[in-house]
Length: 162
Image (cartoon, rainbow, N blue to C red; front, side, top):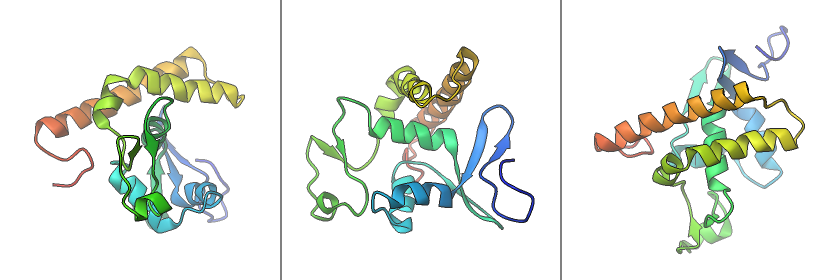
């Protein structure tokens, strides 16, 4: 577990080789620089199937799930992504060049590209991203997409709504 032992919320909690939960406040701090509020961040997560987990220490976000969604939202060549609370979204100006949610079918069909993008971003940031890390990231992404496909096949919304 990242962080200290003085009762503060840790930087992350890890369950094995790939399941890491980050506190919601970590993401809120990052998005605050873009003018995103807590309500808008939570709506983004709900709209895109990123579950939030609440514990006695607050709300948590699973890192790899969030990264996959954010990577798909910002893929080169994809339509602009309009975040909750953005002026274009408030005006309801959805067009073929603008979207409010990720496309789970695109993510399913291009998981290798999305995963490679995450790995490349790590390399560009100077973080370790060896082939084992890339393989683990790909495996996590593939599993997430299998679950999404099963939900779609069962008639459920990809966003977790009935």
